[in-house]
Length: 361
Image (cartoon, rainbow, N blue to C red; front, side, top):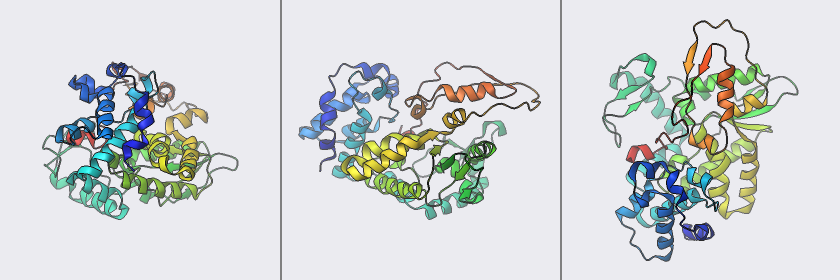
């Protein structure tokens, strides 16, 4: 089935009002109609009719979307533009084939052993290729890599992944919530301190924490290039890994992983299979962000005798903001001893990273 046929009803809902122009980060940067949701809907309608050529410009236009959901959130007609863009990318990939880059991405994210090996190699060899910058920045500048330019700043890879440090089940107190921790690749291999902090806080609350050994990448990097075969495969593997355990919540400490479980899996992966969609919906209903769950479970600040006061600002990740998870992180920061939260200008604006989006743009 043509992927665009699946979203034909959504395409018809768009009345071309242009409200999306005020909220699209790609349009704000480029000021060109193909960059905004309305332009992509129009292109998709013509792709469905097969009256435009699948040329490089069409492909480029569809690539200029971060799947941030801002246009969906603000659309007066509730057009699922993110679903339309994903369908269009899949149609383009079917017609033109995956790019070399996205073939490589799919191969890596489907193979956890390969990912583990690559991370280990990067951790060992990293010091040979990283140039030191101030330790406070948390960044290292790597020599040019395939698809990645000389100016790219990336963090160092952890010597031991987060999931390799902990057992699959960490028992908590009787009667306290059971939580499946969907770790995500960046927390597992790079920002392990985020995983450790989440784990410590939920253990403090007496929760049982389950870190399924069989969990995989959420698959959203594949969605950027139209590799929906990989996304569907990973979604089903993650679903099976989560369903093995009786849990009250599925917790993520990564906005993108949360967006995958909460929105993209039911919306995109479950579209063609009602039984699978019902299972994905059940997991989506249990999916919560770590900050959201900590507030819900009543985490309270403790007097720690904190020394010098820190001033901290906070940026809203798109895949939390569009799920209305904005007050909880701020509530936790304000409650932390020795911390003053200072709001930044443009805290709700997209950062522009967007998974593999930032490699091309």
